Amino acid sequence: MITILRNLRFSEDKLESDKLINPTLTPSSISKKLMTLNGMPISKELLPDLYNVMTHCCEKFGIGINNIQGYVYPSSEIQAQCVQFVLSEYVLAISSGMVNLLNNNELKFVVGHEIGHALLNHNNLKFDDNNDHEKYRLSRAGEISADRLGFICCDEDNYAFSALMKICSGLDDDYLNYDINSFINLAKNLKEPTNVNYFELTHPPMVIRARAILWLSMSNLSNNYQNESEKNNKDKAELDRRVNRDLTKYIDNQIFTDLNVLVNDFKFWLFTITFVSDGLLSESEQLILKSNFSEELALKLKVYLSGLSKNEVTQDIWIKLNKSYVNLKNVSKSIATKELNGTIKLLEKHSDSNSLNDLKMRIQINDR
Image 1 (tube, rainbow, N blue to C red):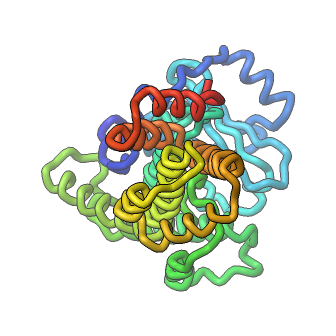
Image 2: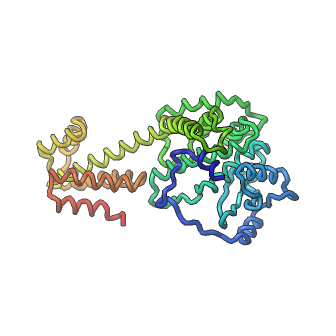
Image 3: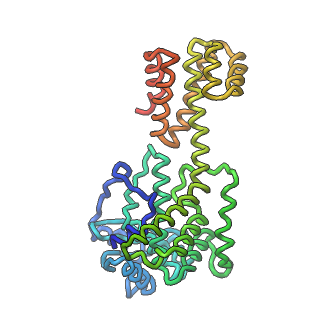
């Protein structure tokens, strides 16, 4: 199993200790009781087809069927999850909506995907009030890894694609035409600018996941994932490069563009509040703004400030600075802190350190 996980884990799926939580493991007897109260156990007697699906996936991963407790719970939502409850024992929960939508071959992809998350320790990635865009990037990378594990559980490649198309649309065989090329080509629509907040995408878009599975199906690794070899390492490196290129092109580039806008906005108002603390913006300070940002932005600021009193200048700029810091912090607290410290350092050439430290403390007062 270790070889399979190593060969199929996406290179960007790097879980570091500071991004993880230590799971609170629930005794097996309690988890069984909780799930029985809210669902139907997957067993040979009650749900034989699903039991066979689960058994098939366990065999692919080299784990015993007794290590997985499966349940179907009533819900129209298309959901599934597998979590670790005790050491080497896992609970798989699948919504009835998912089971009703997919056939047994497609369910092998979903079950393999979810068990894969648990085996790869993805469920211990922590999300809290201080969420960082890096955690969301790791979550998206984890989906690529889990999809690969789901893919090897499929008897035929097409079942992975049809499963994604059904989950993406919520439609079944009565409506869908499984034109995989047309589905994957929808990725070109993602290059168009939108107002979508990409920062908090925990999953890549379905079409990008389908492209990643296509790259895997075309790789020698799809049939040799159980072996350790230099060729496998090279094939995996090339596969990961292709997938990473897609993630960068269709998702991360948009994120980095939006992030740069937020960073520059914050830095501009931090420079400005430093310079207008006396209610004025001198010629030399205007030149500094032009050299660090743009002449157009500096001129717009000058015109804007000309219509305000000295008291209004500091009050208004402070509001804009605080708003820009909150916006940046909401995306990434670590980047907000880094940019605050770095910009304060730059401003030490233009202002005294005591005033800058006071300003920094005032900005960070709500961080505590």
